[in-house]
Length: 151
Image (cartoon, rainbow, N blue to C red; front, side):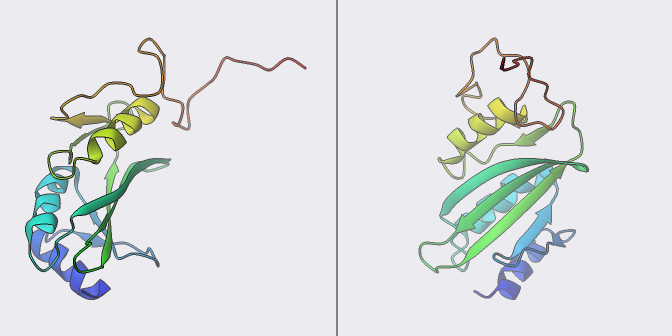
């Protein structure tokens, strides 16, 4: 499928989708509550067959946390980027996609550990790198580290 066809497919599933400006991948911006049903549609539909989540990450931006999903079809050889902007920077939350792509289980644990974004219905949401008693989320822009290197 072409960029335009992939974007049109997402628009058909999510009429209020916004097209992004990414030059490498077709980019579709959707709301948090739409991510899981859209993920299922993209994976299960024969014309899209997005069977591989090759990256799921987050970025802390001025307008909120940007959740970014990079998908590919090993069958059709096309790629797509989905983005969700979470405006709640105090208690960010989004539905999991680990029930669609198993790889998301560890991506989401990493994002939770480093950004503090909660994934609703995740089967095992706990820290993956940091100790359980660690305070804060190191990849947030407002994170303060008390550790000072002595010279």
